[in-house]
Image 1 (cartoon, rainbow, N blue to C red):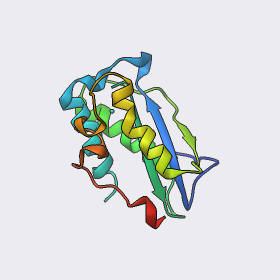
Image 2 (spheres, rainbow, N blue to C red; image 1 turned 90 degrees about the vertical axis):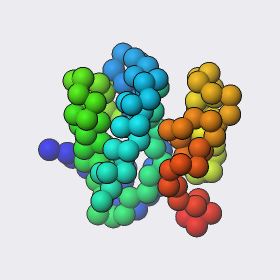
Image 3 (cartoon, helix red, strand yellow; image 1 turned 45 degrees about the horizontal axis):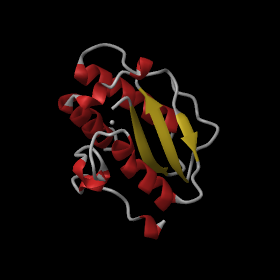
Image 4 (cartoon, rainbow, N blue to C red; image 1 turned 120 degrees about the vertical axis):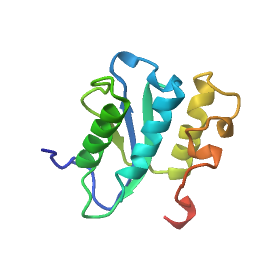
Amino acid sequence: MSQPHPIQSDALMFITTNIKNKHPLFKNNAYAREATEMMYRIQEQPDHCHFLLFLDEHGFISKIMNRYKMGVSHSIGIGSIWQPRFHLRLPENAAAVLHYIHRNPVKAGIVDNPEDYPWSSASGKWDIVDLNVL
């Protein structure tokens, strides 16, 4: 059972969750696609994922992250892949955090430009919230 995270409810959150042993699992395009698509399915990236999420007062980030991690592990079908916890911060500057997220694959040497990484919102292939309306 998921327990409420001390920081949640009605706040924009910057979340990072890592693959066990820093294994670069998301170099595999099928795994990266599944991890990205799972985030969309639970709403009705190479050794970690970053998310910039906004939850209403009824959301539980621990429950969402638990479902996400379980769903990706199950869909990929190679057993437990995640470290047991996740890191959460309340960003003061959401645009700066989004820039950091978009630059992450460039910093890792995976692509030359943020928009070239197909599993990032920088690619234009995924829905993102306009940060100017928050």
